[in-house]
Structure formats: structure tokens, C-alpha cells
Length: 194
Image (tube, rainbow, N blue to C red; front, side, top):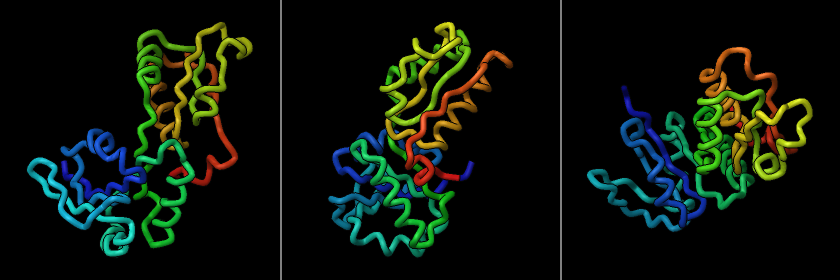
């Protein structure tokens, strides 16, 4: 399998270590890391040395980066920052399909809920952003008989919600899911990948 050329954009420099841990280096060829504290030096990542550049120097990547996948992460829970940087990249000619929300949104509770659905099935499940994650009380969903699972999470965009739903439908007995709740906010369609 050919590696994908990736530029990692870390909006919160404190999240750099956590973000790098999530990057699958077997599938990704890390071209550069862009962060507020980038110093235009090479960052030593084991056997690989990667340019670590500040936002002020991102322009030099944009010309060559139209074919790179841009992973945006570390927004300190403010999905608006992700959307703004995505819009900036698109205005600079980066195709929307090459810009990915790489924000960590999965918690141990989310993973446990997903494993529950895989093992025991469900009548319904929910996806969506943090409003759905903390605001949905499954006990009040009419006719649900209590067999529902909340798979929403902070910073989950429509693409991630779709992929979650696709995964669930691929791993449960056909016909057992009766409905899906999709938690949206007014800005949900602004930052989602097509």
C-alpha cells in the first residue's frame, strides 16, 4: 500500500504529542507539521526528521500541498477553529476532499458504546456533536424500549458521524436498527467534508 502524503496542522501546540500518537505512520508519509510554536527546524520523530513550521510559513506548503492530505487537529474543543482553517486552505486552492478533521473525539465511553452495539445490537443509535453527546437522555426517546446507544462526540463532524453509522450497519444484524438520531447544530454543514 502506498503511503499518503500528509501535512499535520495542530491548532493547539499542547496537543502535538497526542496528535502524533494517533497518526498511523505505516499509512502516512508526514511531509510537515504546522503549529503555532513551529520554529522552521526539523523535528526528530524517531528515524524521520519532519519540518516543524509556524503558521506564518504555511504558504510555502500550499503550492506543493494541493495533493497532500491536510489533517487538522488540536482545537481545544472549538470546532470553529477547525472550520476556519479548513476554509483558509480551500481559499488557497486545497481541495475540500484533501482536508480532514483529525480531532480526537472518541472517549472510552464512546468506544464502550460502539463495542456494545457490535456485541448486543441496538434498536437505534445517535451520532452528532457535543450537544448530542451531553444533551441526549436515551430514557426519554419514545418507543425505544431502552435499547439505544449514544455514539456522538465532541467535534464529530458529519463525515465522522456517517462513517460511524456505516460501521454500525456493517456490524449488526440487518434490519435490527429501526432509526438513527443525527444531532446537528446550525453550523454542522459548514465544516463537514462532502
